[in-house]
Length: 186
Ligand SMILES: [Zn+2]
Image 1 (cartoon, protein in one colour):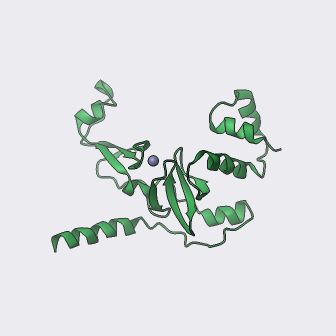
Image 2 (cartoon, protein in one colour):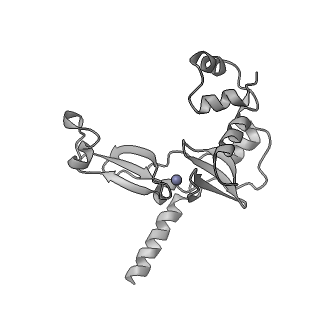
Image 3 (cartoon, rainbow, N blue to C red):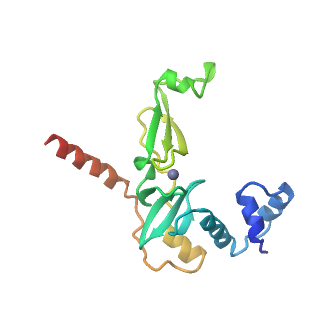
């Protein structure tokens, strides 16, 4: 079964009636639904790079001259998709009772000695992209590292032209910070 682009646009924008959503959810997946979603998302963004995969409400993995980077819908670029984009975001850590109280007033407030809430904002448009609530000092969570080549070759049956090595490259960001710090001090 196949759905119209208008139906999928409504679904993406949360405007589709519940009976229609149920029908779509319970029917076998139509082969071209992914393509239709991408087509709609592509029409909405103001930049030309091809969207390979959406990462969240505002973030996409796009093909930029052969590189696969994470891009915000405002156009801000976060770098290679194999590096956790959060390390290149603006981070606000709620790590004191006062800062936690702003979102968890009163008795609901977690103990700042045990828990911190981190908010990740886009440096380009200031949109809050992600919130994580973790034990104090916990490493920044890498939410999703999609295996884009496998998805295109095994699920869509049309491999992307230039296969990339699939590995977490986040440590390269932090290594870069280390080098910068060494340079500043020595
Ligand atoms: Zn942005």
